Amino acid sequence: MTETLLFYGFGLLSILGALGLILFKHPMNGAMSFVITLISLACLYALLSAKLIFAIQLIVYAGAIMSLILFIIMFLNIGESDLPEERGRWFYLAGGIVAIGPIAILMQRAFKTLPPGETAIVGDGFGGVQEVGMVLFTDWLLPFEIVSILLLVALVGAVVLAGKREVSE
Amino acid sequence: MSLTLLNAAVAVFIAICFVGLNAAYLVWCERKGAGFYQRRPGPMENGPWGLLQPPIDGVKLMTKQLLIPGGVDKAIFMVAPVLAMFPALISFVTIPFSKNIVAHPINVGVLMIFAFAALGGMSLLVAGWGSRNKYAMISSVRAVSQTVAYEIPMLITTITIVLVSGSLNLSEIAASQLGGFWKWNIWGFQEAVGYNILMPISFLIIFVCAVAETNRAPFDLGEAESELVAGFHTEYSSMGFGLFFMGEYANIVIGACLVTILFLGGWSSPVPLGFFPFTDHVGWFLLKIYMIIFVFIWIRWTFPRTTIYGLLNLSWKYLIPISLFNLLLTAALLKVF
Image (cartoon, rainbow over all chains, first blue to last red):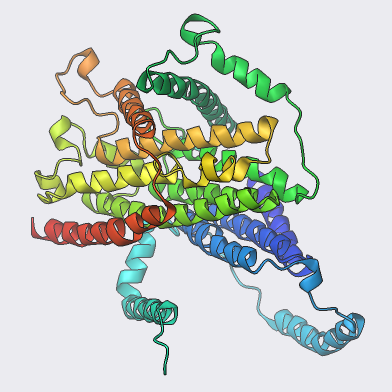
C-alpha cells in the first residue's frame, strides 16, 4: 500500500519536474526542476530495492553532473532579455502535433498488438552491489572495459581542449 | 528489522534530536575552544560556564523575523536551507553507533553517505544563486568547486578501505576492525590491510578531506568573512540561517563518524580486556568522534585560512594522485598477501 502511494507520488514528481524543465523560461528554474526529476527517479529505484543504483544516481547525476550544469548556467548568466523572441510559437506547436500525431497512433496500435507479458517479481538482491558486480565483470566484461577506454579518451580530449595553446606566428 | 514507516519515523526523530543537541552544544564547545586558544573565557553569562547559551540562541533564532529580500528567487531561496539540513539528517540513518545501535543497516551504507553529501553540496550552489547577491554567488562557486574537488580523494580513499574489508556496509567495515587498537585500519603493518605502510597517509587524506568537505577553517574559503561578508548565507536570517548552521554541524558529526568507522575501528575498544568499560560499546564510538571534533576545533582556531588556489591545488595536485597510487598499491598488496 505504502509502496504504491510512494510510487505514484514520485512518478508524479518526476513527470512534473520533466514538464518544468521544458516549460520554465529561465534556465536556472529548468535546471532545478530537472534536479527534482533526477531525485524522484532515484527514489523510484530505491522503491525497486535497487539501493546501489539509487546511491549512484544521487552521487553522479543529482550531485556531480547537475552541479556542473548549474555552474555553466551561472557563468553564462542568461536573463529573460537574452532569450530569443518566439513569434511563430503556435504555428510550430500545430506543426508538431501534425507531425507527431500519426506516429503516436502507430505506436498505440503497435502496443496493442503486443502479447500480454508475464511480469515476475525479481528477488530482493536485485540491483545490489554483488549482483551488479558479478554481471559487469563476467557477462559484460569487454563492453565495460571498452567504456572505460572511452572515458579515458574523453578525459584526454578535455585536457587537450583546456590546455594552453601556443600562439602561432 | 524491517524498515516500516513507523520505525523510519522514529529513527528520523531520534536523528533530529541528536543533530539538534549536537549542533547546539558543538557551537558552545567551539566558542569555549576559541576562548581557550585566544586566552579569554568564552560565553560565561547564561548558566554555569555559559551552558544555557545554546538554548537561548536557539530561541533567539526561532523568534526572529524571516526576511526575504526583494529580488531573490523565492522558491529557490526557501528550498536551499532545507536542502542543506535534510540530507545531513538522513545520513544518520545509515551510521552504526555500535553493534546494535543503527537505525537501518544498508549494504551500500558508504555510498549512501556520499550520495546525501552530494545533495548537501547542491544546497550551497542553490543558496548562492537564489540570494541574487554577488558575494553569496562567489562564495557558492568557491564552495562547490571545493566540494567537488575534495569528494574525489575522499571517495578513492574510501574505496581503499572497502577493498580492505570487502564490504560497503558501514557496520561490517567497523566490525572487521574489532579486537584492539592494533587492528584498526589506520595501522599499516597488519595482515588485514596487506602490510600497506601508507595507511596512516590514507587516514590523513580522509581527515583533510573531511575538514574541507565540511567547509571548515583553514579551508572555509566559502565563508571567508573578510572577503565575502558571510558567504552563501549572507541574505539569510532567522531559522533560514539556523538551518544552514545546523546542517554544517551535522556534517561535521557525519565526517567524524565516517573517519571513525573507516579508520579508527568504530565502536571497538582500544584495549579489549573483557570487563565493562573496556568492552566494545557505543561509548568508545562517541569518545572517538568527539576527539576528532575536538581536533577540528583545534585546527580551526590555530591555522589561518588558505587561498582558494592553494586549496584546489592541494586536492588536484597532491591528494588525488597520492590516493590513486595508494588505491593501486593496496589492491596489489591485498592480492600478494
